[in-house]
Image (cartoon, rainbow over all chains, first blue to last red; front, side):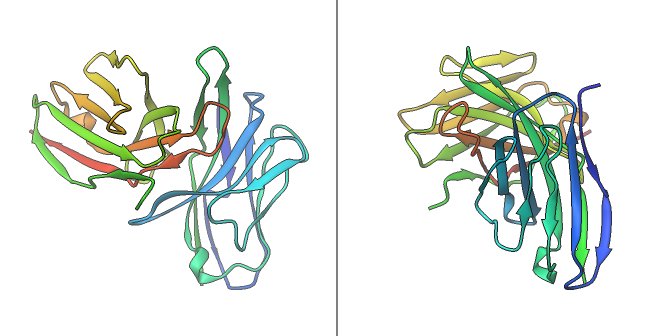
Length: 116
Length: 111
């Protein structure tokens, strides 16, 4: 089954304690991205990756790091989490239809993070 | 000015009603347009892409108006299961990989 998985799904942590949220896709997609979703603000892109070892900042990258050592995995790293990073996080991977010049994003189930 | 704007709603309609949502975008260079559906506490899922000629999928019809820079979603014969938040998504071009999401329009279909 084609899917994007994230772990953990729920996490409560304390300020300053480094954490990693994993993301994995089994669709051989080149493009992956991370979003956060906050009430009233919608989905905002944190980082994206166009291929292995190629990453770039999205709209709200401050306080986050990513890595793309393998095509299937795109972990999100919070080196020193702060309460303003409490949010719902989604990982996504995309397929690109060259014929239609369109990409379609598939989202993971989300990770709810609470930073105390 | 926000790049992608949607009326947050909620749109509260009875079963069987027809309801329409609009979404405006500010970047005239935008090339790819989508509607996603998001259920409460779940991940967004692609509902349909929006093509220049307009497209229909069952009870759902999407239209693009490049001159006025908006896209629309029409839902006919609303079902209770259509209750969700509908997200408008715009990107500069296929392969740009930097989509911009609207904040979503909430739809509540009641018996």
